[in-house]
Length: 110
Image (tube, rainbow, N blue to C red):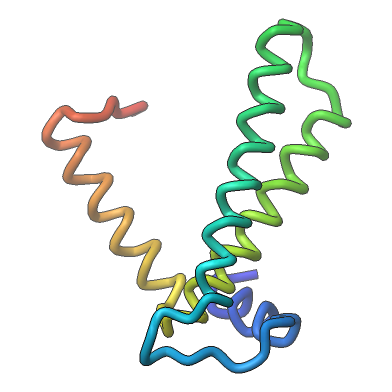
């Protein structure tokens, strides 16, 4: 599924109703809270796995996938709330990361 399709599917499931894109709508801000919660869950899973220092099992991968899916859902809702395209966001982010790599600010895995 591409990002544009994801945004269309999220719009079908968006339980918040219509979003006022002319002002900061509290319904949109809620998505920031949910994004933060999902990031916290991913961080907790990663710390727990690091402490356990065990092999990565299918259950762990399933949990990571579930929370990444939630994160994508809420990111798509947030983008929709502000009238932004996830495709454009990702393209711009990749250009930004390329600049950071070129400047030596983040390592390149090549």
